[in-house]
Length: 396
Image (cartoon, rainbow, N blue to C red):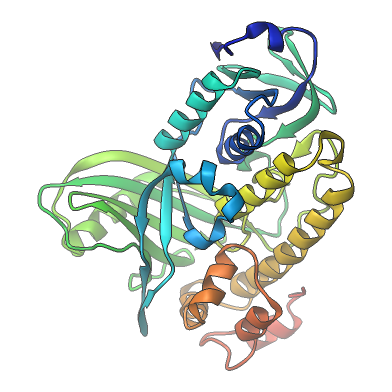
């Protein structure tokens, strides 16, 4: 176990409970910790991560408008790349979206989190530590050490997402590539669906980090969780060659399989331990984007008094999230039951004809009534199975 020791160890060993014990060192708990320190540098916070490093191996992106003014002070240092907008490309539609876009990497997140825990006088970061039991006011670690807390937050990743047959999957392999020659793309390409549609909705995602460094992600929205990493790796390199990237080598590779629920996964956590992140349903069920929802939850935890974090204000917070989640899960039902896998790209192409603001709100899981009407009204996308859509069990 490696430990980032606070400057005054006696304050974390005095027997006084922590304000919050965070189990899991991914994006969700990192944002909670940073929000807590931003509000109160003396907050008593412990973060427990079973691997030797926090942050994992990920790239998180979001629209700049997803960050409220009250969070910019701790979010801005996390950002490693920014763009003024991005492109999308489908067989019948190519478009530029004028919404600023930003990216966070695990490396930057790790550096910021470790520094903040090191500087916080009443905080402790435990890596290489396994939480073997979580209870409402304490966490038991392997070896018997006990951390007492006013609030326990469990955010140990998508592996703990409730098992259900009503789930589809986003699966991907992303390659960060070093190039021999400069490339000319200066905006992200969020979806390039001008590719063979196999195993569901298939597209490539491109982030140009610099003239000689790009991320190419080979992504599927699929009915199955089976991920052939080698095949998707080869596909990403073939795509890079096809669009003109002169690849010198692969600098970094990431992969994942994320659940895309077709229904709300029961009730959201209403107590302590607070189940957060993917396991708690705090993500976008249609896109898989996690940052906007994770940030909202982090601000809720940081801004509420200790006794109120999961009680009176929590009911209103969860009610708003559940309504957004339910609508997005309903859209998943339409996508995965009313269209054949090879036709699903039509749905996304139709979606990207919406106004820029509506697209941003959808990604942030903040759709308005007007946004929902635009999504559902009008001529249906090509390939819809009318009988399945009307009678196949699709319900909001």
